[in-house]
Amino acid sequence: MAQRNVVVVGGSAGAIEALQQILPALPADLDASVFVVVHSAEGAARGGLATVLARHASLPCAFGVDGETLEPRRIYVAPYGRHLVVAGKRLRTIDGPRENGFRPAVDPLFRSAALHHGAAVVGVVLSGARDDGAAGLVAIKERGGRAIVQAPQDCPFPGMPQSAMMLVDPDDVAPAVEIAARIVARTKESVAAEATTEIPLEAGMSISGRDDADPSVRSWDAFVCPDCGGVLRETDAVAMQRFQCRTGHAYSIESLLASQANGVEAALWSAVNVLREREDMSRKLAHRSNERGLRFATERYLREANTSAENAGRIVDVLKRITPLPSERAIAEAEEE
Image (cartoon, rainbow, N blue to C red):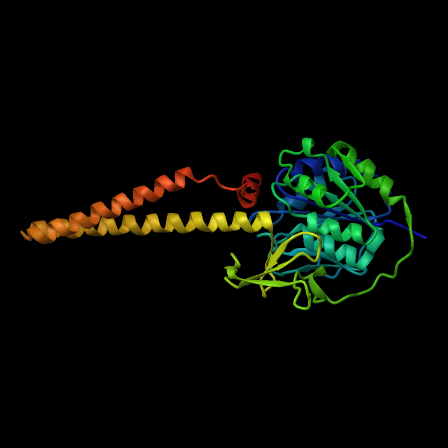
């Protein structure tokens, strides 16, 4: 018999505060490797997260290095811009497709741990705005692992824990201050020893997110990937609807809706910018025509300018009425600041 010795922790907005309570309470003799993914904004300071968490951790804590061997009593943090995954007795950091708009993302870590270590895994979902991590927690539970969820009422952004609880019957639901004790208790449980194998990173959606061979995949030709414009395909192979393009970009339902909303807003602001430039150009042409005594041309350009200004104003009015879905990226950017 073996013990649960792989702990994977994922969160987004509000998760850093939870980790600052969890990591100091982990015992120095914890006989497990701990992996942490926190969604971060593009261009975030590369040394920040590991440094912040290390100040509070009772165990050595640093960014994971591609190819290093897993060791107990260590905390491995996903580096910015790369997925952190478990590959047998090693960890990997890979520049794979974004999931739910993020790299690193929670689900690749959870899926890879479940694939390679099965019942020896303890998955922990912390605060976050949407439904990231839910699919990964399903994979962990299906392989016999344990699921711990931060109590939604303890989260500044309860979306991730609530989504996880809709798909998984968690073994523990607790506030952040109690989660370390729950982790310790779960790692002391015995499980059947399972061979730790080295499986290629390309082995299905369990790690890389790609699912070319999955028979449950259905093409949605009318919808395109917000990241690359490829055709999205739908799969419910992990007990929840997910959408993927052939490149491997993957989205949960909430993340896809949020990305589409952000795309619509960006397109509308782009239209406003074009209309305002058209207005400025038309007014300059009207001024020049007036200086030359070209009355009809002056009136025409003024009409063009006024029409552009009116249309830009209408679009701005629409933008003011838009109620955006929670923007995980905006939240992450605010936290980095």
